[in-house]
Image (cartoon, rainbow over all chains, first blue to last red):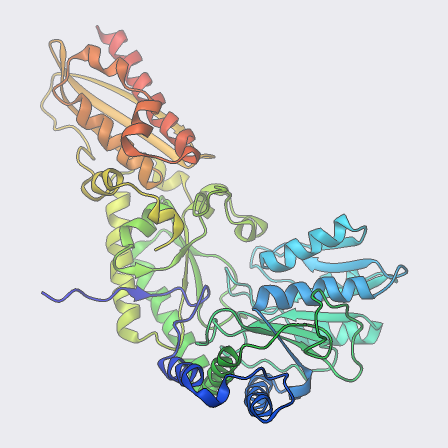
Length: 395
Length: 129
C-alpha cells in the first residue's frame, strides 16, 4: 500500500523550495561562466554582477522598490539585526529611544535587548487579546528622543497584521526611522516599500519558496536613513553589508520573488480561503479557539488551540502525517511557552494546547481536508485519555 | 521532524503510540484504589486507578494530560503494576522511569508528577488495607 506523503502546514517556518527555483539555482552553480566573484572587474565578474542585478531587480519589484535600495544579507534575522542595531546606533547620543513590541520575532526582540544593554531605552508595546499592535499605541509611545520604531508586519505565530502604512506615516511626520519586519508577509500579501515613511523593510527567500540563507534589507534611498553596518570587509552592498555575494542564492531569491509576484493576487485569496476552510473543518473538535485576530491577518497562518490538548503530544501524534509547529512548552530545550501567545494573555495551559498551522503556495484543498481529518482524529484520541475535568480546565 | 520530536526514544514512541492501559477499570467490583497528581504549570496531570486482589494489583489503568513522555510514563507505570505484588509499587520512581524512557533532563518535572500520582495511589492503598 503506498504511504501517503505528510501534509506540510509549516510555511511560516519555511516554504518548500519551489522546484523551478531549485532548477535555476542548480543551473547557476553548474554554469562555468558564472563562477566569478560578482565584485571582480574582469569580464566574468561583470557577467556574474549582471545576474546579481537581475536578481536584485526581481526582489525589489515584489515590494515596489528601486533595485538600488535592496541590501542582500544572509536572511531576515541578519536584515532585522542590521535595521534595528544599525539604525539605533547611528542615531547618535541625543536619540536613544526605540519603540517595538513584545510579539516581535526573536531577531527583533534580541536586537532590542542588545540595545538596552548598550544604554538605549526601549518601549515594549503589548498587543491586545487579538494580537494586534495599534497605531495609537505607537503614537503614545513616541518621545522627542525616539530614533526608531521597529514592528513586524505580520506576526509569525498568529498572523495578526499591523497597519504599517499608518505607523509609517506617523513616523515620517515625526522624523523617526521606521523598520518593518515583513518576513511573514512579503510574497504572501501585497507589501509596498514605497509607502511614505517606510525607511527599512526586511524579508528573506525561504518564506516564499526560495532558498534558505539569503535575505534582504530594503534601505530607502531618498532620504536614506542613517544606519551603521554590522559587518566589515570590502564595503559591498552600499557599504552596509560586506561579503562576497552568493550568486546562486540570489538567482534563487530573485526567481522566487518573481514567481510569488506573478501569482500574488490569486494566491493571497486562495490561501486565505483554504485557511478558513481548515478552520471550519476543525470546528468538530470544539471546544477550540483561535489565537489572534481572524482579520487583519496574513492569509496563511492559523493559530488554533484545542481544549485539553498538549501541543507536543499532538505534534507527535501527527508526526508522520502532518507537519506543523507547536506553541507549547518544551518544543524547545528551554521549555518556555510561546512568549507571543503569553503576550496575548493566554494561560500556560492554553499555550500548551495551541498549534500553528501555516499554509502556502503548495497547499491544496485536499491537504487542508486531510489535515483537518488528521487533527480531529488525534485530538479525539488524546482527549479520550484525559483525567476527569481536564477538558474544562485546560483551555 | 522537529528537534523535540527527534529526542523521543523508541520506548517512548511505542508507549505513546499504543497507550496501553489508558482509560478506566472495568466495572467488575473489588477493591479500587486511585491516586492523582497535577502540575499544570509543568503541563502534566496524571491519574491512576487499580483493582486490588489479595496482595497484588489485579489491574491498573491511567488517565493523563501531558507531553509524550508523561503519557508514556503513565502507561509504563500502569503496565508495571498490572499483576504485580503490592510491594512492587514502592520501588517505582521518576528517576527509574526517566532511565527507562531515556528522557531528557527537562522532562524530569513531568515525570515527578507521574511519580506523585503513584505515591497518591499508594496512600490510598494504605487507607484501604
